[in-house]
Length: 88
Image (tube, rainbow, N blue to C red; front, side, top):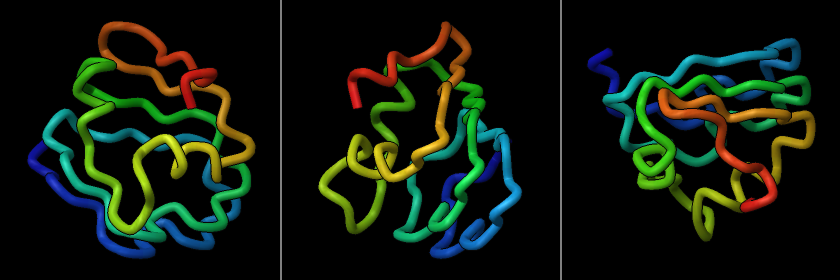
């Protein structure tokens, strides 16, 4: 908790990253933060589904296009259930 931003390329090229936990306090993700995370399957977010949708993703049209670029992603798990990836 307490992290409000993920900086540019923070996890870039972490090719073996399978899961990541994001705190409820997160509100901004800089461009390229998860570039080339080819095996990222699950994002655990401590907030609700609606709160996740409000996170700002820099330099992309919106959060949806950023999620689409994570080809292996199977689930975004929030405190109130999983987001429907079909929305993205």
